[in-house]
Image (cartoon, rainbow, N blue to C red; front, side, top):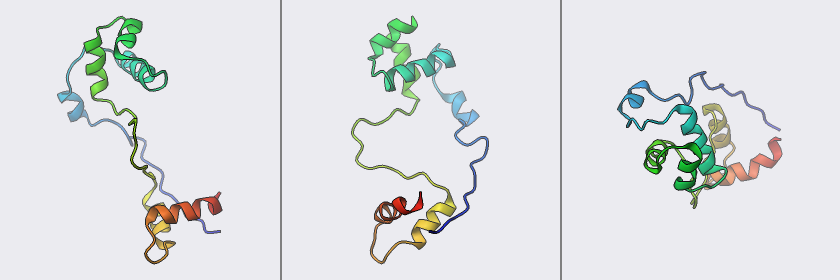
Length: 113
């Protein structure tokens, strides 16, 4: 079984760029309300109207607040393996001739755990 060392992400990985935050529309929804709306939309599969009623804000505010957030796609055509550079190099080095990277990952994952 092969092992590889990974580089951990920085403490600020995933943070929003302050310049991007400045140009986003101001929708009058607090960050807590925005996160609650996202949770209700993703986990509870509530409509914009149901979310607006629960949070006491307009449906338009909910739509604007969620318009800049990444939400899961309903119909995914493919998935992404989000790994470090070192892990990607490891999988590429173990790839067989003519084998797609996803095939390599599918072949190796069961043997890594």
